[in-house]
Length: 561
Image 1 (cartoon, rainbow, N blue to C red):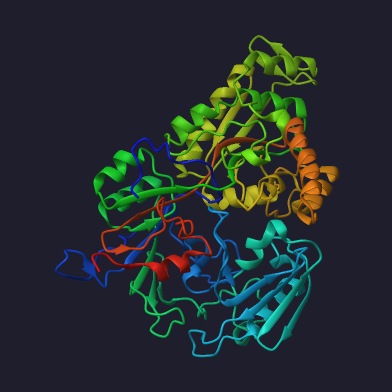
Image 2: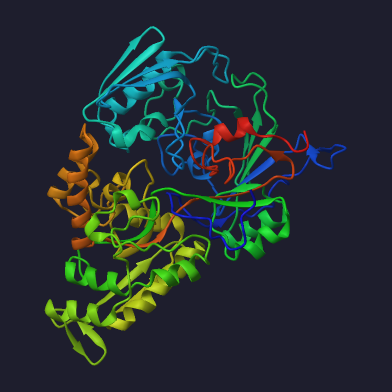
């Protein structure tokens, strides 16, 4: 279903990066191929695009977050997971993939999977349960690879079955367990350092193989021996454009076919250009939030965090930074609605964010801040300032921090806007070398990911060491205990009690400031291929950078068939 022009059908959000930097070359055309009697190209390639800039160094290592294969998303057509979990429709059953059977124990501490028969790696070797065993044992042997903190205790191989045993319940992490890319044992067991090897000749079970890598584009070709059957699309090109504007132009002209990116003025800039163009923002439980460094001035003071939270205008963020493409975030719990409605405490129902400048000033003066004219002075008599940082080219985020900078002027604070290159920003974000940034949270099956990404001590690293989340170094052992309780509980009552404490801490302590909802955004066209997920058939989210992309690639069929 093509997006309605009002965009009103879209609800909440999910995790994904909206980035921007550039390739210097023209992308391969997505509509190349022979033209049949239907007027649609047959045998056309698909060009899958991102606004991340030129990727100068090749790395196909699925364990390295900044590897080219992960940043552009092409790893998801080469390597596959055990199963596909639909994070946008909780009523959809888990779809077994490399596992033909998936069975959880009642307490979600044990998972038994059966390796699918008839699957081959793209080098001709048979895929077996030993590959599953090897992949998950790597997470035990090298904890730095376990970025989702799965906490595996044991991995046992028995014939074509593998049993995974975890320290804690995986109730809130079922997708994190099942979406791990399975790697070939016969390749990776001979690699000296799996955390750094570039894996230049990637071997996978997926529907496509790497044909060519350049800084301009990455080409994949369809396998003729793929276990999942014949593939409609013969070639995939992954291309990175300079920024969202350049990517939008490519999508609108048909130069690019499929993307995950924010598009300003999506109706006029993309949808109105061709009736075959589709924009879909599938709902989830993730948000865009302003992470602040809670270890250093001025955000080490909860009173200042509260005051800033009270003057951020989420309505402006939705209408200007996000150009009406997604709903505004409203609940003071930080949970997107309506997806988050079942989890909002009764005491917070109906309590929404609202700009309150006078209230914010009172919070500050009650806490010992003073004013010299219109300028806010901290308790030591120094002017209060801070820097907001996001990468250049991330158009919606740049606009977002500019709006926040304008908002805090109302309480006498000067906030400088900083837009470094993406690599510099990424390192500073991870190492805690910032005062305030915009970033996203993961989405998940429950609010756990949202709150854990912001507040959990399991992510906590000293400033200077790379953190995967909790970038603001918020340190609260009690809330971390409640997050663990929520994740590990075996009954709903215990989960509800833990979530209540977590939510109250989030509201009272303001460890970060939610600014907007975050869907799984995707753009594609139906000129040459149909079978895409969408509003009328939400079998999975349409983001090509997700581990579930292989499912979409196997569902596509030539248009007019």
